[in-house]
Length: 112
Image 1: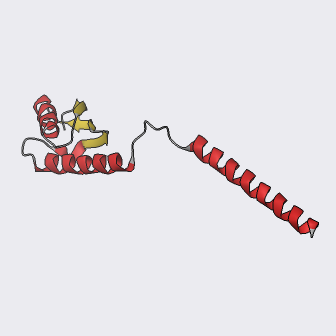
Image 2: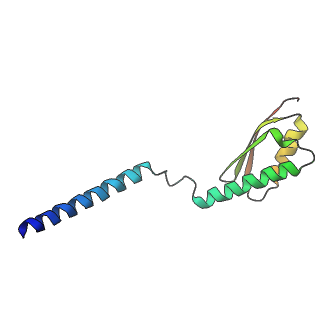
Image 3: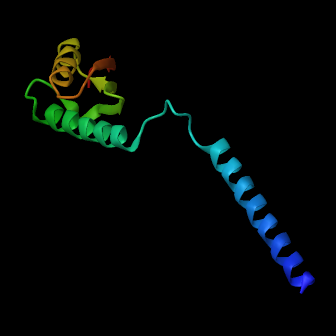
């Protein structure tokens, strides 16, 4: 009878130790609290999609070589456009998208 109680106690201790170890590993590998939440990720994805759609719809922007990334409402534009006017127009289009807090325009002007 004492043997069974001893085995139960040892098993309980092992389970607790395993749970504490697993929690410690999860906490160590989890991103810091300042990283984006699921809600922010969805919002950023929505902003990116809207920016791409608006760039495609813009008559004064040839957007086939423009890449868009969004992080916490900040939109990064990379790639190339044929003129400085199109670079400026692309930034104007992005500025008017709801949810965009700022634009980092890293577009290169390259004649096609």
